[in-house]
Length: 175
Length: 277
Image 1 (cartoon, rainbow over the protein chains, first blue to last red):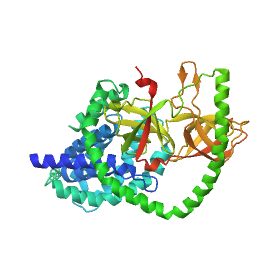
Image 2: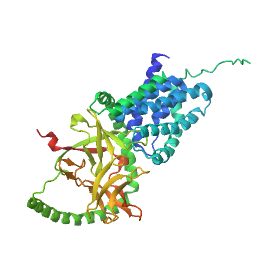
Image 3: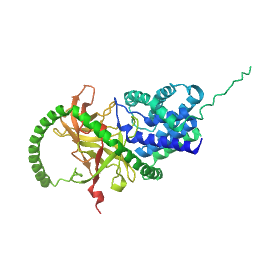
Image 4: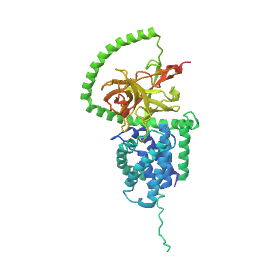
């Protein structure tokens, strides 16, 4: 990966985190908000692989936690795993299919919400499961799915594709 | 690599969760927040005209019904102003007569620090905002935050130029409150499962609370201890009152006077005695 690509990835993550923290988080539609940063991290994982996805998730999470003065590391932990899962998904199965961003965002959004809920719960924060996992998750999932393809296309255009094709060219069966 | 990042994130959570905002991690976060803040403020200013446009369009649709409602409210308020003037005179006289000592009163005992809202944490786990005023502006943790409509929340974390405000709709927020008409007291909390509804909890069954009653902060004081919120800040109006035979307390639902979904700017109340030499 070139320095220019790394710089572009950093820029994409930084802007996505700022947009999420300063604008998107304030826009409630149907009781929930979209998560532009999560979708961006998933898109980065899909186009650049699991390691880039994880690093992007970690960095984006740090920016969000700094911006919102939240407990440092929570968003990073969630997004690191989200980026990694998206990257592994691209490396192992469906990276060349058009529905890949929709499938990845559709699966990772509820998993990330569930994981974040578990982390907050373990930290002793009083979180209502129905509100966090039903009331707000359904509209958030819908909005993330709407954003998935445009953001994936934008990310793909900005940082290019690479590092995801780790499938073996041929398989030898040893009997 | 990924394992290292996960471990690093867990270490950060552990350190950040344990440390106070003035500790080493708090200092690091404060410095980081100062670096990120100009970008967030810039982005917020770019987005503001679009938000204003949306709000303007939104208000156009409800303008007629809103005007009728405000006229009726205005008539009721005029009558109440006269009653309040009498009550105030009587109050001043009685306080002097009994040498009454009181906690800090709103707004006379506070300086107002007006701050722009520059962010919100994503997700449904906290109801909070980040404001563009911090320790350098005199803001400290546990300072009450209001808007022109009423009580908004409490400062929970402070960096040099920003602060995090836990809104009254957060699951962990609570404020002691009273019904201004009857004096019935309770604790205002977030109503579970919704984003912008409050409940007045712990209201005894024998206390009288009616739909439409206004709920304000109680601002109690016991010895050297006092409520974080000063007395008399409007919280909202009662929308429903119910009770069952099995419950110990009444179920009182409160519609907050503040629109928590569209907070653009807030006022942090900084006690005047903090600034005194």
